[in-house]
Length: 324
Image 1 (cartoon, rainbow, N blue to C red):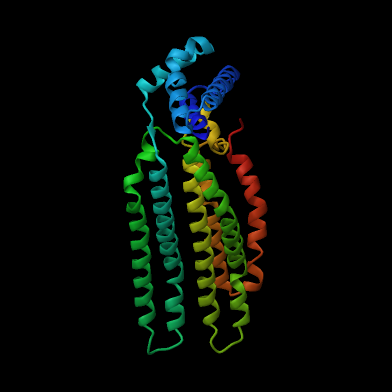
Image 2: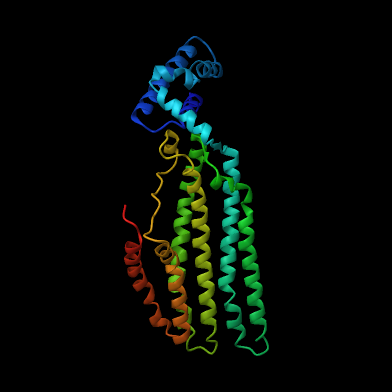
């Protein structure tokens, strides 16, 4: 019986999500269930009964007039002929998710290496013997980090069609993606929370080692904590965005649009400059925090930038977003 339901979902996937279409789908499902039960009572096997039901009720073009969906089916065929959609199978979806996880790992690792690289010259500055080794190691880390970032951009080249052409997924595939997203949500919550905590408390080592003979250890540990925190945030959010992308492939105005999570309305800004301000806000705040902290070495005071920036961010977003 599950096979019949899945087949019915595929039949109605491209039709508009209206009360009439939902009513017709429910009526057809009831007719298919009645026919299936009738065949089973006559002694036919499950597979035979399913095949008979699908062959009898499986042509929506022939049933459109009886179901009162002539206009909807005709419009669907016109849209499909003008803008054909590619179906992504369950096997392709599983391969895409695995590729997305690897891509997210490479990108997050590359960003972390670029951040942590600053710790190398800081540590080497304590010894004249290794004074040149620090900058050399810094450029090595940056080179590796950039390499990972560039490689991550090519890692999903075979999946770029998902963004470039209309695609859709069926109910079984959407159910699998939703289950993967649900199981990953707990991991993402832990990664993001821990990453934010590490970025907030990164100044603590600077305070602890401020009066020590090896004062440079504090800033080095700080960059290490920031790198790990950013790694956790970037990795978890990148994987989550990949799963959301799959769930939002289907046209939201169609029946198949109900397979995925409700799509969040796209944020619109009053201008391109306003959008740039919002995007660059937190990177600029981070740079400002680090510059002020290194110039003043008052890590015990410069942390106040973060709560102030958090309050100001809300005001910036309100003024930059376009009202619906």
